[in-house]
Image (cartoon, rainbow, N blue to C red; front, side, top):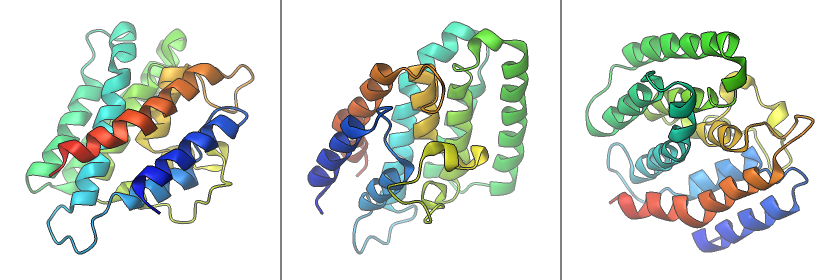
Length: 203
């Protein structure tokens, strides 16, 4: 299936989903489609496209973080780690240690800033991206299928795209008052603009 057809499928899935979510199984299929057959570069083009897509996704919701935590550099530091992984050899153990500290900091923010809990998802999204950038972590959940709901995914395995969508919509799909319109807005942007931009920026 071509990328264009796959993106059209995604838009249809979002429109048909009761909560206007884009299921994780579909996202894995789309992320795999970003690979280039026969590519032997390191890191491979597909991986660089996936990380670029993650960077775009987190950058879209950074203003929400800045509004809640204006002097906190957590997501930007995590994005810096993700970017470095694409341009130079990375000490995975060191990245994981720093990501662990950043994750704990975000946990602390959830407890001390209840009103900003959804905006804290921006930090988690950036951290998950930094971890994935040092491996091929965005494809590490092959058991997912199109019927898998986000609530069935281990909370520590949510990808940066889903976490960014939660920040944008100010809520997860399973919550009692989901922001369907805002969630659809995020995924529509992701499918119609972000994926194309990630491909364009990766040569």
